[in-house]
Image (tube, rainbow, N blue to C red; front, side, top):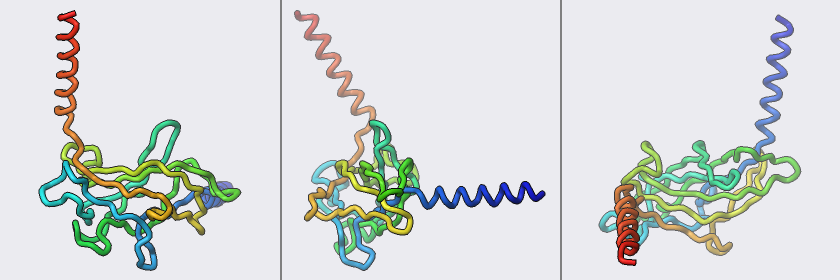
Length: 195
């Protein structure tokens, strides 16, 4: 009994120590104190519902943070956060409230680790950001040094620091892409026959 109790206490202590050693970022492009601290996310000029071109996205969209793992950017499901406001509503629309996100495989020891990130905005949260009919967009990669749970690092999403806001547009249907591929293969076959 004593042995089980001691092992339980040690296991809890180890879990607590490892959780405080994680690298953390504050993810969101709207400031905690109210003023806007980032670039608003907008609909693209084409490939969006009628009347939405150029408007800021609203609460029917969510944002998700991705981190570089090997050669691939991997989504962090716990980072999903909704956008504020309504489409084109001005003010807070196009922005997300900040929240702390633990970056897998990082440590905040020694001032933190540099990590390459991207973030994306999409609708259809319930069925996933890559589903047909989804409207989606993604930032370019950027690198930050992660902080600790007590002092997370907040990426600067302002245009003054060179962060380029991005736009969202419709994810192409797989059948469209397949038809383009078949058309290209047909043209190559026709060209070979003539030669």
